[in-house]
Image (tube, rainbow, N blue to C red):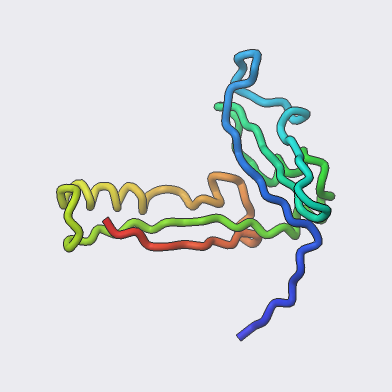
Length: 132
């Protein structure tokens, strides 16, 4: 069993906002990409904005915030939630064929980290199973 003695120097909570820019273009300029709000002396909240045609790249968005050096960006740990859907015949609701279709579609989706351009070595997934 390994024990990690890690105390983060910075805690950043980020939120994603996907929208069209005010001028009706599907891209957000880097200067408008990140808004930083100081919540406490060592906790910041970063809102990242991406247009409908932008690639949602969280590391690149955090780089636009100005909070991190490139070396710090390589050491960040990203925590992402993941739900695994399981068809359970004991739970009534959808028709069985719809449950199986829904489960297979969910299973075929790309991993969440890939969708946000997060390096796999920096990604920690916290998951649960949902039975339908």
